[in-house]
Image (cartoon, rainbow, N blue to C red; front, side, top):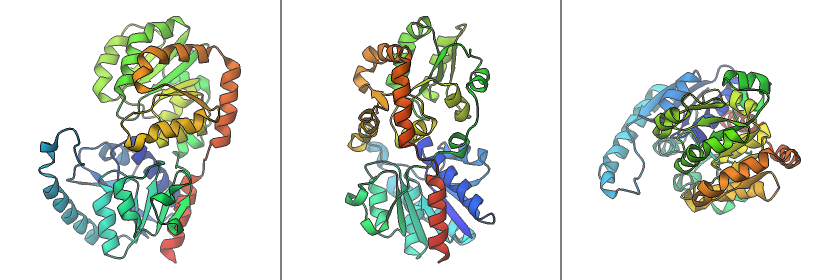
Length: 362
């Protein structure tokens, strides 16, 4: 059996895709998997690191900030369909899974035109436009949350939750091993700062400005900055004890093990991982996400006492005082951990893989 997994652009698309690929391999060892992504995007690096082949398309998304940059889009889309046609001719897939990101559209659209089984994973509570279009002819649509009938045909929806990487979901790494990896102390509370795989400007600037306050409060910091802010952050922490900074954390299971509290955006996959690792979180939702879905994601946890939230434009003023207060309140942290445990889903990848295999074989 041959399966194409298409999409990417951010870790929120790539890492669930890899989790699904691993689950497919576990359930059917001889399945052959090919990833298709966009040239120049992070999937071209992360997928091979996970041991899978990937082919890149010459495609770009719609640029909302500069309309002039969209002039070449129709030509890129036509070129990507021709590339997809050649990929299908060589690989001959039995099924195609789309995980989001603009590179998934031409792949799934072509598969549907050829009558090949297509599957969509929609992680967010508000579906993307491409997925809504593709959902009409999909064999199954896997969703991270319920209530998605307003976007997709109800008879095609399967609520699975969002796939969390097995190295995180099944991690047995101790806090000691985690802090040792980052060169930190096991006697201090650790704050893990992650602005998503590409970084978050407001979170980075807040940590930069208030870093000394965090350290003076007896906390230590693991800071994933994203590439745009990496040089600034690395210079900022030079010669400082109790802080680690870099553009990307490859071994997130070690960072989660080391962490006592997490500061993060509220993308669907980040939220899913935080529930699984059961670490109290302060969310700073990205305010320009479609339909403000990150705020909805964060609110779902806040309402259950599983997290706290600060608006993006209030982060500079309020995030660090709230962090320091939370770090000093062990009872509140315990309440959050219990609430997070009730929301954790650890087998979404297995459910998706099983359904893909069942539908495709029958």
